[in-house]
Length: 217
Image (cartoon, rainbow, N blue to C red; front, top):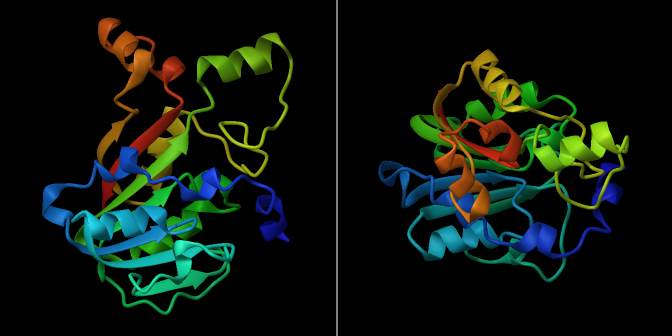
C-alpha cells in the first residue's frame, strides 16, 4: 500500500510549518477558507489559522498520525485518504486558498488531481504549489557525473517521488490544465538566492532546488 512508503519517514517530514509557501498568499486571499492537500500533521494549517492567513481550515492527508494536530478542534474538517482515489464531500468553489506543497511529484496522475481540486477553488482564489527541480546542479552531478540515481528518504530524489520536473515541465503542467501562472519563484533565502541575483538569473534553473507557483483558474 502507498501508506507503507511513508510510515518510516521522520516526524519533521510531516510537521514543519511551510512559511516559505504561505508567505506567497496574496493579502486579498487571506483570513478566509483554506484547503491543504498533503497537510501532514496539520501544523501549517493550524499556524495559518492562528496567524491570520486563514479563518476556516480543511486538511487532506494520506495517513492518520496519532497524537498530531490532525485531531485538533481548530480544523473544520480533516480528511484521511489518497487524493487520487477519494471522493471529496466538499462544496465546490468554496476555498480562497488551496495549498499543494510537495505533493504533485508523488502522484501517478497529477493532471487528474489538479482538475479535481480546481473544482473547489473560488473563481478569485489561488492555488499555491511547491515542486522539486531535478535540474538542480547537485542532483545533476550525482546522476550524470557519479552515475548514481540512488533514492533517499527526503529531497529531490525522495524514494516516494513518482514524477520529476524541471521548470519548463512545471509550467507546462499548469498551463496544460488551464491554470494561469501568477508567479513562479524559488526560495528567497540563502547563498544560492544571492548568487542568482548577482548572476542576473543566468544559472537560476541549476541552483534552484524547488519552485513555488501561485496560480489562478
